[in-house]
Image 1 (cartoon, rainbow, N blue to C red):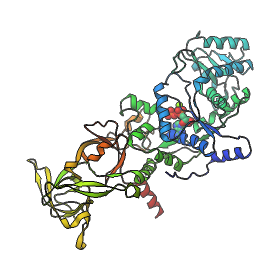
Image 2 (cartoon, rainbow, N blue to C red):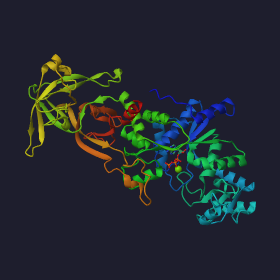
Image 3 (tube, helix red, strand yellow):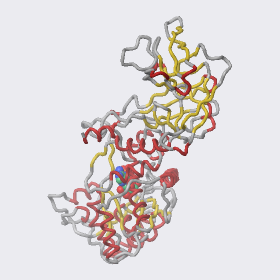
Image 4 (cartoon, rainbow, N blue to C red):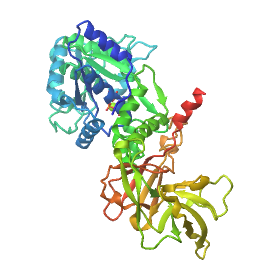
Amino acid sequence: MEETKRSRDFIREIIDSDLASGKHKEIVTRFPPEPNGYLHIGHAKSICTNFGIAKEFNGKCNLRFDDTNPVKEETEFVEAIKEDVEWLGFKWNSLRFASDYFDRMYSFAEQLINMGFAYVCDLSPEDTRTYRGSLTKHGKNSPYRNRSVEENLDLLRRMKNGEFPEGSRTLRAKIDMASPTMSLRDPAMYRILHRSHHRTGDKWCIYPMYDFAHCLEDSIEEITHSLCTLEFEVNRPLYNWYLEILNIFRSRQIEFARLNLSYTVMSKRLLRKLVEESLVNGWDDPRMPTLSGLRRRGVPPVAIRNFCSTIGLAKRNSIVDIALLEHCIREELNKTAPRVMSVLNPVKLVIENYPEDKTEYFDYVVNPEDESAGTRPTPFTRELYIEKDDFMEDPPKKFFRMGPGREVRLRYAYLVTCTGVIKDEEGNITEIRCTYDPETTGGNAPGGRRVKGTLHWVSAAHSSPVEVRLYDRLFNKENPMDTEEGVDFTSSLNPDSLCTIANCMVENHMKDKEPGFICQFERKGYFCIDPDSSSEKMVFNRTITLRDSWAKMKAKKKQ
Ligand code: ATP
Ligand code: MG
């Protein structure tokens, strides 16, 4: 599938010039998730950028798990992240774990002590904060700042050997407590955490801080361009400081804007809360902005890649309208999804003058957007199902669907005229009766007859009940994080984001399809078979409706 053409953004321009000047012969990037949750569509932007750039420039991209904080990390997340990256369509050059470098990081720390650039500090976390000062106030030197190299080495080794409790000491870089750059005011390098790590077990009880670890990881892997989100801009001086002082491979950090989407939240921490408090049905709930949720919902990976290249890379944070993502999904599915007739809210339609034992087959166009998809035979019989809301007993003039005495077209089949209804004791319609005109095969209207309405239908004898899950936006608010003080973001969860309908009728040939199969239910939207399906009952997720508000909005603007 042809993807949207990328324009030259500021990162690609930097890379162009680094290659032209001979600074680098080969581009190496990395995608560095922390395995503390499932990936979301914000990560997709980073994945498409890092892997996409490596591919375009014939370079390499590593998948690196940034697993330096044992408190929140789990192997389950490592596996889920690998699956998601592959599903999005990318292959890593090399699979790495930051924890593989713990020994090397530790020797870099000792090296910095030996060079007089690091010290063990006994200030409490509160005092450390006070000593740091603020943007308008210089920091104050720690009373432990001038310990000797020998004392520092001894203390660090004892920290590593587990002699001290958590929070009692840190290893800090010795830079400048008066620096206007806050990140350079003697930042912490190591902290004590008596925790088991998902890969190194109990080998370590000191763990490196992100700022110290990340630049070393990049340097060890000889990452040429370390692409990250804007919030790391303030840490760039520190990133460069470590690499310069240690005189090791200089990776270049470049920041770009995070992706934020309207009507959802985009942080593993917040998504994790939704999962842990059972506010959604797991990480792969189809309402979640996670890649596993989008996959389960039926969103094709190419739609996500196209979305990411459409939004591009910028230097300013903003909120992207979720309608743009939906537009990319529809564009893709319209081209690729086979059409199917299914009735979500069925009522029986009986054709009085159609023979009881007859079955006819009409040629059904599988995808009008894709000639190669061809046609398939669709069975037609005397008893059908149509949508309840395609019928009105007392229809207004503009209602072009079915009503007593009115003629409508049954898609691909015949014109039929409603003759009446049968009701139960409570007055509910249980059956609609009609007659068909045998001269109208294929839905033709001979003699200039004007028939406006075309209804979809299924043959009662050739369809089965299924469950359908309809989804709406997860939050009612455009920006769920924009709350009054003390109000939690979960307060704007949309209580109607999931609507389950039992006993929808779909054509029987769908039974051969596997979970993940995506199709269009004509007039109703795009649907995907859910893994909850069993041989007794299939379950379909509605990926998205057919109406495209984004395309409409664009068209309006042009006018
Ligand atoms: P979260 O808050 O969801 O945990 P994170 O930045 O802490 O996000 P990481 O696992 O550290 O998550 O992220 C891996 C990479 O993905 C980082 O380089 C990060 O900058 C990038 N990333 C995370 N969220 C977004 C986003 N919304 N848009 C673009 N890139 C993102
Ligand atoms: Mg993080």
